[in-house]
Image (cartoon, rainbow, N blue to C red; front, side, top):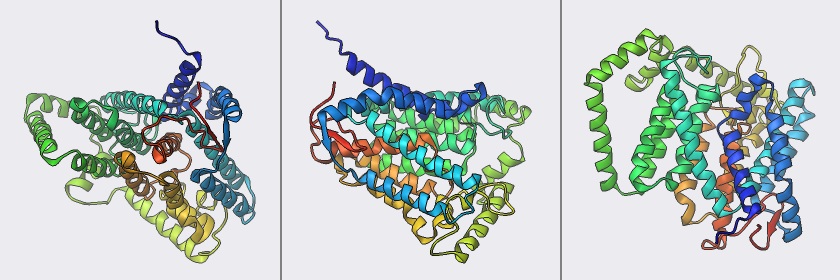
Length: 409
């Protein structure tokens, strides 16, 4: 007779809710119906409250490395707030950072057990399939979700974030995909990233796939790569491709912006407006850092660089403008906290994850506020914690401040 454990069902439902709401970016997309992300985060806090009470009852206090990073990050944000004019922008930035840390630890708590981590990774795989389907659909129906003609975003609404989420999805889900479907899953993520025409996401995908293939054996993967390449060549020479090319041309996908981005890979050119704007704002941000290299300009200063309507597109520059030289270490210390005590069991996730986050930080200043990234950080940190001292035992960890002595129901 099968025994149904209500507590177990509740926990697993919470895992699926977290992935479905935040990794897919549905929480942000729902704003068009008047449901702001804060509503979903508050709901997640409420739903997670029984886990906190259970942890308090069963657990004992501990201080995980990620908590030290959180204290460092929040302390830096609040203290440097007083170096600004304390206007609405700076105040909003402090609020955003506090909310990011709260969400990070909610994620840690929800996926604290190995069984829940596996379920979360399987749910991420489903999220990747959905995101890919939406991006491919938008490729043939431009601007269904995206505001940029010819580039797909799905419900992420931002094309670069869509590409980044798919790369992270590949990293997190690859090991839970059956071996016979791994190559197909890699191809699916490529199909989802391509319509975004996000150069940074494409580069990230290439780096991650190269590592995964090297780790899984050159001979086996070479055979799969040959099959994949031959299939691609056959497709491009078939009547199907000609019809496809005619369709996307008629629908305005191959516009100047897209063609300029394609030329980045075919000819190595970077003459499009986006690249020029990023270069200009990066130069200005570097100049600001040079003027205040020790203490920076204060929390949120990088959000409104005079003469530009966009941010730095670089989390390292953003933190350095805000906090001076100390800001350069915010992301590296976060990665160190996530990986503290990592062993060989998790290296196939931790190495590509670390590489991608460190590289992605050079293309985005939103690394520490995008909830699909924060959830990924929480999931990897929980995996490392679960394998740190007892790699063969499935034990519950409440990473914020609690570590229960035994598995919670």
